[in-house]
Image (tube, rainbow, N blue to C red; front, side):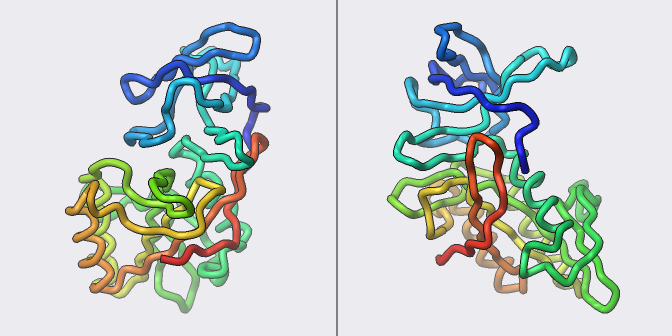
Length: 233
C-alpha cells in the first residue's frame, strides 16, 4: 500500500487525547496531526522522536497532517496508523499474494457477522470453506526482536475471538491474523500481562479451531506492504 501523499519528517512534541499529536516540522512550524491509533502506543510516543507525517489538502479534514510512521533512526521503522494493515492486506489478498489464502479469489471487506460485528475480510471460493479473517495491527515491542499484542486492554478484541470460534463451530475457517508493523522484530507473543483476559480468550479460541497467523511488513516513507515473512512464536 503506497501512501497517497509523500510523507514529510517531523519531531513529536506530544501525543494527547489519543488521536492528536503536536509536532514540529523541519522548517520549525508547529502543527497538530491526526493520530489514527486508539491504543496506548507504548514506547512509540516519546517527545522528541523522529516521525513521518502525511500531509493532505482535503477541505473536509480539519487536521492537515496524519501521523504514519515512527523512525527509530537506526534503520528501522514502525507504522502507527491502525487503518494501514487492512489496506495493505486487502491489496495482498486480492492479488493472491498471501500463501495461506492464495486459493481464495473473492475478497469481501467489512462483512457483518456475529453480534453487531464486522469481519475484516470474508474470503470465499467454490469448494472451500469460507474464511473469516480478523486483522490486528502489532506495534508493541518491549524486548529486542519481540513484537507483542495488545498494547492495552482490548475488550473488543476479546469479543472478536469468541465470534471467530463461533464461525469455526459453524463449519467455516476463522483466522486471527496479526500484522506486525515493525521492521525490527522477527518473533511474536501475546502480552498476557497487559490483558490477561485477551490472552485467555485466545487460548480458548485456538483450542476450538481458530487459526493464528503472524505476518511482517515492509515499511518505508513510501508505503507499507505485507511481506512473506511469517513470525515465530
